[in-house]
Image 1 (cartoon, rainbow, N blue to C red):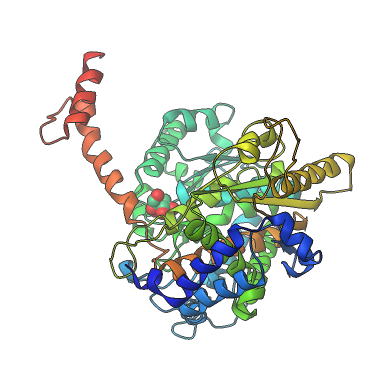
Image 2 (image 1 turned 180 degrees about the vertical axis):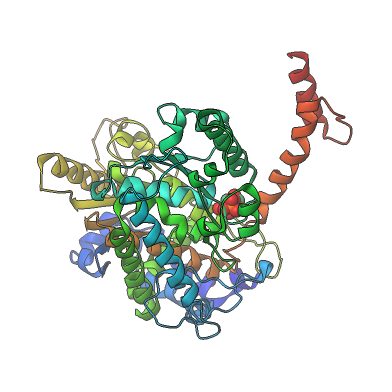
Length: 525
Ligand code: F6P
């Protein structure tokens, strides 16, 4: 047994779970009709209502005790101090510096000159593109941006460009390509003109197979349209910590924007990886996004654990994953603009905490990150909500609701009404006496995260909220949330398989299943 599952805080929660399991959400409300007020937290532009959860004040107190036992305040201080908390890669974890308003930060080694320099380069670059100053090889202004990247170098900007589409400042076309499947790039290029297209190649390492393959195909497309010339380099900008790699590919040094080893890929949208966001919505909107995240950072550092939004979200997840056996959590934004949020959170949460050994390399004897999934409501209601309401799985839900969208409209009202109806139906069910197939059992928990408006500031806070939630969970589960070794092996394997597949090479040494699949593929050639 691990120290965690043998700890007094864990044992107290195990005992309390038995009591709560015998009490329904409806009973909790009957016993305390004002719980909606007490079980909610405001932080800047966000409101979290967690009253429809299977918790009482004692559960929240005991869960906070788990965080104290894990020395959460000390870990928060360590992250903000720039300590090397990503131990397996010997790196600090300083995405918070990217949105810090401090003159110097952190105390252990100021990174702010580099951060400010990158923001200035972004502002200059965005100004040149918006002003039509930046010209392609044939002298025409840029009209379309194709962002090439994958994982953390794609999901954040992709999600935010969509989420901020009402704030569009330019008529630029923004396109995202991540898949090594050539169909992805081909589809993006089909309506584009080489002379007016700019490629952003975003890759922290500048070694990622998908990104390099797409960048090479993009260059071939430019060459086919514009002819081979040094001027083609005008069609590329890179965002990377590997400046030498980008230059070797042919991006001029002044077109390479920085990344640093103290920013994890999935935490990097605040850096120049967010360039597509700034190009779409303008640099001021990008800075507002940073301000929103900064406000959430201050909330996270300063609020007591039981009033701390990221901490409370993390504690609720731990409550369900470790004490109720939940294996998944659904994220359902009632907003088409936020349609890509579940995909973004999948990487953030599952790549960070999808781990089975703790910081010391010991196998854990408790569950860690759940499977995160979801889709935009209301279409989701006509897809998987049946299972949420009447299925056999226990699935806590996060509803994300925007109060107003532009001018108040009936359409937005219908969206909000649907979101609230789903949360109420999950919690309180519908008895339907004598008709078991119609009955909804209720007692199914959900959070409602309310954003009054979908502003850049609110979005910044929403994303930072989830980053910190993931960190808190990692601290309690005793994981390093900032490495991703599980992904490496598959990448290496693909690298060894590709030449054998293309050149019909030797299959000796491969496992029997892969050998058999190779044989089938060859037979069909
Ligand atoms: O999927 C593994 C991963 O390393 C992610 O963590 C990262 O966001 C992605 O690949 C892309 O990496 P890079 O930015 O170096 O191309």
